[in-house]
Image (cartoon, rainbow, N blue to C red):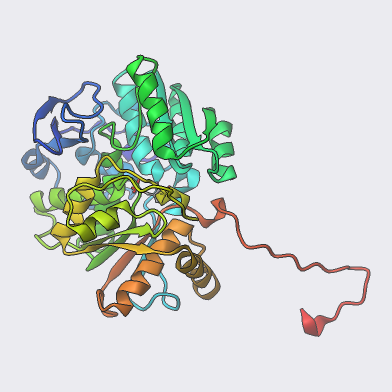
Length: 407
Ligand SMILES: *Cc1c(COP(=O)(O)O)cnc(C)c1O
């Protein structure tokens, strides 16, 4: 049995804080957005963590997500829910990307995507704070992760997804015990239905960044990555950006690691990657804006990043700018080619969103934005097996004459 799941450990949350105004909110109470309508960030007594948890103690633990317990919000060990949130591997892509490029392959997590990191934390906190019914808009993977974890702790879930959500996502959500509805609109249209029901007191709103704890779960990507690299940071990170939870979470993780004295002031350049058919953050980045307007007629094969409007837009833009990175858009043909190349040449099947990070890396290399010698991490956020694959139709008649030379 993994000690990380069973050992009682001290916790260090002090309060929550509005990401826009800095206004404080009490910990250990249910919250959605701040009074200013912005995401809440969880704050810890990092000096006390520093005193209580030497880096070597942490390093000696099993490497799963719950090793980071002192930097996570769950108070009571009994509220931990788990389906096996392993440390995801860093896989080199020597032929399709280059000698210094690593893919953090998040497709190995429960429910096949990194949404598991965010939702395992948010559901544990929902359990801790007494929530009994949750609703969520999703492009697929978040709904699947929510369904799995909420079902495991006996919380009722109602999930709304665009009607062209990948079929496997809709079915896995239903299979894992949620009630799922296909809606004739995009994810923010689904979000409007959730908001309406929330206003009527029907359920707790689990939309991206509208509850404070998904960021904390996603933050473990940054903690884990740094630990895996031997307490170093890579030169650049390419992150497929929809709601931006992971990018915001990792940026927060790097600050917390520095405050603990476990790393220094260095930061990777953060590249927020979007599809050119839905690139609100890229447009705002290029225009020098602090907020991003809704992207109309959003279209891309990369369903996970088809997010026309992000409530944490300013947090994504601030992190990208502070890091010296950029927001980059890549077209669907480049995304599909990247998926194809990584699979054919390096044997790693990426999801389209992961393919987008490879396509963006290639573009950045051509533009002189990154150097071949720099250590770079791309995020593959879901298993490629969840998405439609190109047809393979060749058949053999075992009763006929087989031309072995032609096989
Ligand atoms: C949700 C999702 C994203 C976007 O992640 P955010 O952190 O919300 O920006 C990217 N790819 C896949 C496969 C996803 O499911």
